[in-house]
Image 1 (tube, rainbow, N blue to C red):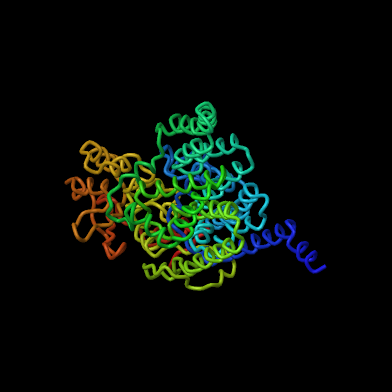
Image 2 (cartoon, rainbow, N blue to C red):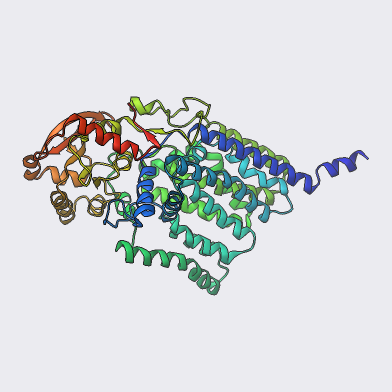
Length: 533
């Protein structure tokens, strides 16, 4: 009687129920931890929102009116935010809420992939969720409002389709990854290579994967007059100065953070023969690592480019455990994954940096805001300062040359921007890709003088005395700049490097009441944010 009761207690149905309870619990932890970090914002979410606002209101995929440059890293995320904006769901909180939904679905999608791949071992479906539950990187980016969580969910969904035996659908979905992130075609190539069984099937699968990629390419050529997104030129070959990491350094920092999940577990899974779904997860994991290496890292905290690697590695590990057939070792490994993630649990950007201009990479409080996703988000100190500095000199319809784009352009929605690093500006992006090209340098310089910005915001490397932006360096070394613009302010930023504000000499400062009214109007147009002071 006792043995019969034990077998019933641990029947496949009971194991499955327990596993899904663990998935639900892990998801709740991820969501809670994400809400702890949701007050944090990064510049690029405001780029997405400015594009989405213009697409929703003016039906134009552009940062500035009439300037068709693809300056976002995800067409799908931009369109999704534009649709939400059109429906009345607008601003940073909505973007963060949507990314939180995508992030919350990652454990469930991972569980479905493992369940399909290992139907005889239902408990294994909880392994990815437990491995991810305490991971700060996943949680932080799940509430970022960026495309990161959607990208992770999309890649995991490809593996889930493969695990269900739907190779064609998996490859088609892999091709559609190009709409979610620029590295999507690399992932599609890996999916075709993994899922093809011979040359004929490889050709068929490649044609399926090529359909969404070709459609996106035709859209780019027809609308943006470019084959590649502008972010490719702005980021893929830019100088190392100003980056937090090189490609190898960025990769090593992530592997050092979670070596068990990202190194040992995938190697063990590969040796155990993880089957089709496991091989696809490992292939996409390798693609993520390769892209981070080639891209040269990223300035943003918490290893954004490698968040997608976490669920892929966890899926491969879980499937590998199924091949191992050692329940005690599987339990020990899962506990080890959870403990490893817990070591990262306190990492996030301290919200105090918004007024202090420094980052200590620790959570300032483990309690979410009183009204997460609802209350206005504080702007950083620098955009708030610049907003007040520029208001007397910049009127609606003017152009501002900015070393970077993000919060300030989102607030100043009726002002055009000339982006020094080239994220949303074609000539500056080409120069960032090839900073020593004289022709590209001349093109960026002449665009500056053609547009004659009312103001220019320049961050100067105090070691060299030259702007960090190659495009701005080309403009400032021209005698026309000194003749046409004058300095009005200088404050430290970016590791104490001076941020200098120039205004055109023929622009007179408006009365203080006019400047204050401009600031008020700009802020009234974006009730989802508030000034730092």
